[in-house]
Each structure stands twice: as C-alpha cells, then as structure tokens.
View (cartoon, rainbow over the protein chains, first blue to last red):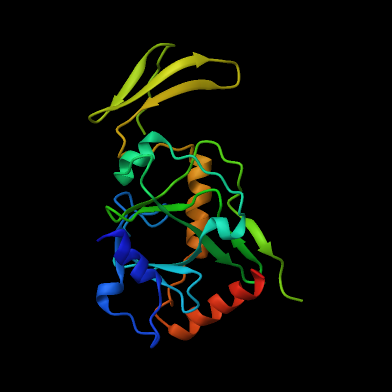
Length: 148
Length: 81
C-alpha cells in the first residue's frame, strides 16, 4: 500500500462508508506492548476526520483512538533510534505517520500517551510503538481534567 | 529461572545474537550492556510494563459500535478546543 492510499484511508467519504480498499492495513511485527498477539491492524479515520482508529484484526478485540501527537503538543520532538528505523524499514527521509494513543478515563479525564507513540511507515505499512530510552514526554499527558 | 554468577567483563548469550554483558558492578547497581538484533526490542522492565498497562487501559473492545466510537470522538473534540 502506498502513502497515497493511506491518505485516502485517513480521509472520510461523505456517506460514512469505508470501502475495503480504503481501509489501510498495517503490520506490527512485534505486536503492541500488552497486546503481543495483535500484529495486524486497520487504520481508519474517525468520523470527524481529525483522529484515527487503530483496530486489531487478530487476537483480542482491541481498538485504540489515536491523535497526531503534534496536534496535542505542536513543538513535540521525537528522535527515532536506528533500530526503530530498521524495524519500520524506513530511512531518515521516509515520511512517517505518528499517532499517540488517547486514554479516556472513567472520570472523563482525557490523556494522551506521548511517551510511546505509534509510528507507521506508509511505504511498507509496518508499524511499531516506539519507546525511546529517554523521553521528555509522559505516558499520561492529561489534555483535559474531568468535566464538571 | 536460570541463575548465573558472572564477573565484570563476562557475558551471557541468549539464542542467536542476544548478548548480555556485565560492564560494571557497583554497590547498588550493575551496569549491563545488551546487544540484540534490531527486531528484538530491549526495554527497561518498569517502562515496558507501564506502556503495557497504558495500552490495556486505552484499548476499547467495542469500537465496532459506531455510536460508541462517535461518543469517544465527541469527548475528545470537546477537549481539544
């Protein structure tokens, strides 16, 4: 799948239906931490178009609401380790898709995991959740306190 | 669990291509070097477990339900300004 079709998958059509051809399949060779059996996911745009859903196609039913981390913290800077690039079969110049997992807590607090973003290489459709050895950003970056 | 006694400068080999070296031994800690193939992620256990827990907490099993999806998205939009 090409970057273009991923963009197509990220854009919502008017009827709200998603033809299979616009559902982007991504392989996570290492699974996701905590979901080691989930290696194939589909990425599709949320109804609003601003967010992406990452839904597992195997293993336990698991979907993640995600957002571009730079939408949350515009000045965000991440450096990928050389091993991460190898895993993604990417080079320094490959345009990558970054997604941060959103956590909606029971009391309505919304937090975003900026510590371990998901990175997808649209050219190979390989993804992984990266955990830099050191990071300035927290696992639970609260973007909103509970509604009063 | 296998238990080894290793001295500074000694190592353990796991499978094909994973090496764990004892680099320095201090009073409160041991400095360890790990060499592993690129497809084997290596993490500090407490960080890895923290990410596992965060992923489990964030996973929804009912995202096939369009209404539930829309409700979560609406909450997020409301808070992102």
